[in-house]
Amino acid sequence: MTKNKWISDPAHSEVYFKVKHLMISTVTGYFKNFTVQAFTENDDFTKAACIEFTAEVNSIETKNPDRDNHLKSADFFDAVKHPQIKFLGSRYD
Image (cartoon, rainbow, N blue to C red):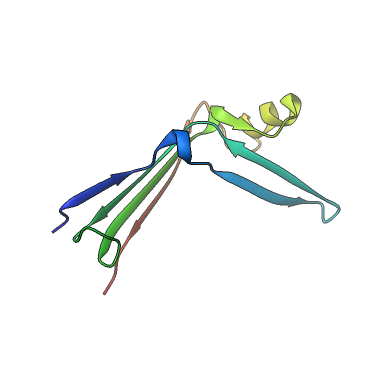
């Protein structure tokens, strides 16, 4: 049973990524809008039960508007059909 819910603080949190492109260059970027929630049994993370991460696809920023629009398109994330990227992790004993 989870007793505590932890929520990321957007003023003190960042989600950056780095992706190798054609083995020649590296593309870096971040998501401006995201949330992270963790659920724990204790007042710390020694018994974390679950973590949920969500990023808004339309908030992607790579400092290249053309690339950002391409990443939002159906060629990549397809923000129209899939406006969020979600990761759910749970503890297995």
